[in-house]
Length: 220
Ligand code: IYR
Image 1 (spheres, rainbow, N blue to C red):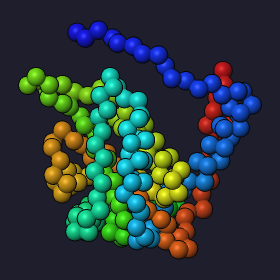
Image 2 (image 1 turned 30 degrees about the horizontal axis):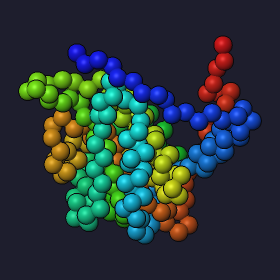
Image 3 (image 1 turned 180 degrees about the vertical axis):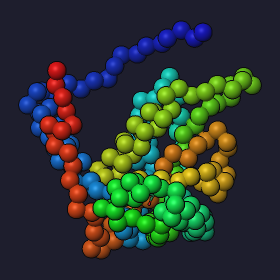
Image 4 (image 1 turned 90 degrees about the vertical axis):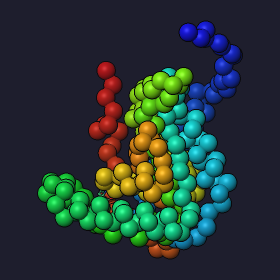
C-alpha cells in the first residue's frame, strides 16, 4: 500500500461579483455550442487538437486511473474505412434495429444512415474507454470508467467550442469496428466518435430548444 503524498493546492480566489460574471459568461459561451453535422474540409492546426485533448485529460477520474485514449484520425483512407463501416451499421439501425419510438425522437434531428462528415471533417477523434489494465501480470478493472470518460468528453467538447471549432458527438452503433480499424487492444472500448472542424458555409442545425433552469434545477 503506498502512503498518500500531498502538496499545497494552487487556488486562485475570485471575488463574488467577478464569480457571478464569469459563470454567466461561461454559460453564454457554452449556450452558443451546437452539435454540427455539416462540416467544411478546412484544415485545423494539429496543435489545437492536442491542446483540447490535454484539456480533456485534466478530467477527474475514478482512482485517478485516467481510463481514456483519444485516437486522432486524419488519414483519408482510415476516415473512409470508418465511414463505410459506420454507414453499414447505421443502415441496419435505421432499418430495423431502432424502435419506432426512438426513430420518432430522431425525426426532429433529420439524421439518417448517411454519414459524409466522417470523410469531410479534417479530424475524427475516437474516444476509447480503458476498461482494465494489467499491473504486475494481473488484470485490474478501472473504476467508474463510464463516468470518468463521460466527464472528459464533456470537457473536450467545451475545449473545442472555446477554440472556435465545431464538434459532433457521434455514436454509430455497435461501435466495435472502431477497435478493429484503429487496431486498439480489447481493453479499449469505443466510447464516442467526435468529428471536429469548421462548420460548412451556411451550415444549418435543428431548431430545437434547451430546457429552462426551472426544468433542470431543484433547490431543497
Ligand atoms: N447513431 C445514429 C442514431 C442517433 C441516435 C441518437 I440517441 C442521436 O441523438 C442521434 C442519432 C446516428 O448517428 O445517426
